Structure formats: C-alpha cells, structure tokens
Length: 70
Image (cartoon, rainbow, N blue to C red; front, top):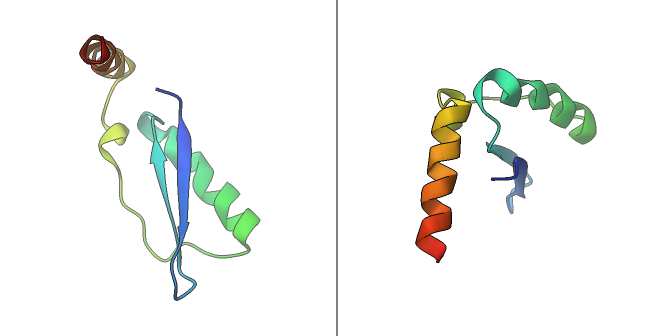
C-alpha cells in the first residue's frame, strides 16, 4: 500500500484529513505539515488502526489483498 493522506473540505469549510498506510507515529509528523499548508490549527485528532500496526502486519495484509485480486 502506498502511504497517502486524504484531505476533505466540508461544505461548512471544515477541513479533515486521514492518513492511510503510515504506520506507527509517522502519521504524527504530518499534523504540523497540514497545519502549515492550511494555515490552521488542529481541533481534534484520533489514531487510525495503522498507528498500532507493524510493518509485518501491513505486509501480510497487502499479500492477502494481492491474492484476492487474482
């Protein structure tokens, strides 16, 4: 899985972001980056399932997905 960040702007102008494929604390590095880019401050945040996943677990999950596609 390629790591990426999904950014959504709601009709009310509220911006939300969710990381995908960033394992462990790596996702936390992007909070400051997004705040700088958006000239905003984080109102709330939550850990995704990827926060507690290991690289080994992610590799197994990717292999299962690859097998399911064939």
